Image (cartoon, rainbow, N blue to C red; front, side, top):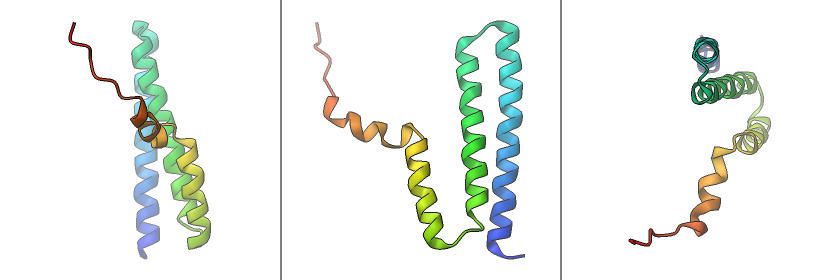
Length: 95
C-alpha cells in the first residue's frame, strides 16, 4: 500500500471519529442545554469537514494540493486570526 493510500485511510478514520464526537457532544449539549458544549460540537463538525477535504486532496497533484492548502487556510478562521491580532495586544492597566 502506498503512502498516500495509508495517509488517506488515517485521515478518513480521524474524520469519522470527529463526526462521532460531534454527534455525542451535540446530543449531550441538547440534553443539558449547554451552549458552550454545542459550540464545541460544531468545532468537531468543522474538523470533520477539513479532514474530508484533506482526504480528497491526497489524490491530487502537488499543484492542486497547494491550491487546496490555500483554500483551507481561508476556510479555517483560526489560521490567520492570531497573526492579525498581534498588533492589537494591550497590557493590563494594573489598577
